[in-house]
Image (cartoon, rainbow, N blue to C red; front, side, top):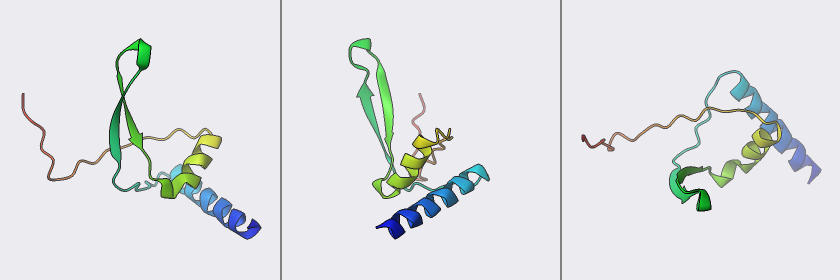
Length: 82
């Protein structure tokens, strides 16, 4: 088990280095969900990250790394004109 933890830590460190160097990590296809803010009113949209990269999300959270999120729309998506 210690070997697996060391391997995961090395992988996590490598991914942090990729982020710092300005490279992009492809998260795959994600879903966006709408949620209410409860008694405050209003809506919030949440992006659910894939579970297969939980070690990365945990590491980024622990190190308080700020990330930018870019959304690529599929070619089949067309915005409706008003």
